[in-house]
Length: 305
Image (tube, rainbow, N blue to C red):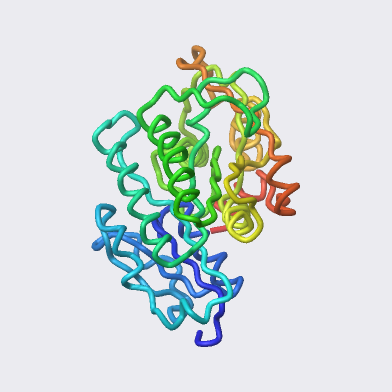
């Protein structure tokens, strides 16, 4: 769209969270430069408005070249340029892959600096580690996986680099997302598919507290952080309506009309990660509010399709 005056660069643009963010940005009038891997099976997602999306095929080690693919005239005329960094790969304790993510993140910021873009990095609840109390942005970071440790390292390094380079930096920590584009192998797609098929489901004790947020709401929160989040601040990206995990499991069975006797609880999970996120800072600074409740996500994702 030639009259777009807002530009967004999105790494990981066709992943689970990235695809919903890209959709959200298009709907809100952004010209999106979608950074993706050549050959990914997800690259053809959501291209209903191809004129609003320009694909950039780059691997993470080349993220310092992203700015070379963005139209210089569009940059000069843009009212707002936002750089959203979601790309991240590797198993949670694959130390080599996780370390490479930190290097790739710093290279992504090099491109953001070259474009004088506002940088919005996406972290994870894994940075906090094991917490008994409500988790605020002031909760100390105590990660216990390579994934959480490298997310926390990226946060500190990117924040320092942004300050030194004179660009705005905002960090959002995602908790637990469900909904559109969610891959199999995660808890709720597998749980719901088994319940729908009348199969037994074997779980931990599900005593830990959890917080589920529709990925479309998360996309809205991330865009608002780009537009309204305060420089050098971090934010929890969550629903804020946390319950014991067993509550969500049994709600799923009820929404799906499944037999609750198919659900079998076992031993307490180890490590015992329990999530009670506060989202008061996100709401206060951006005006964000939840629009999609848990039951609606289940219906949209597992029934009304």
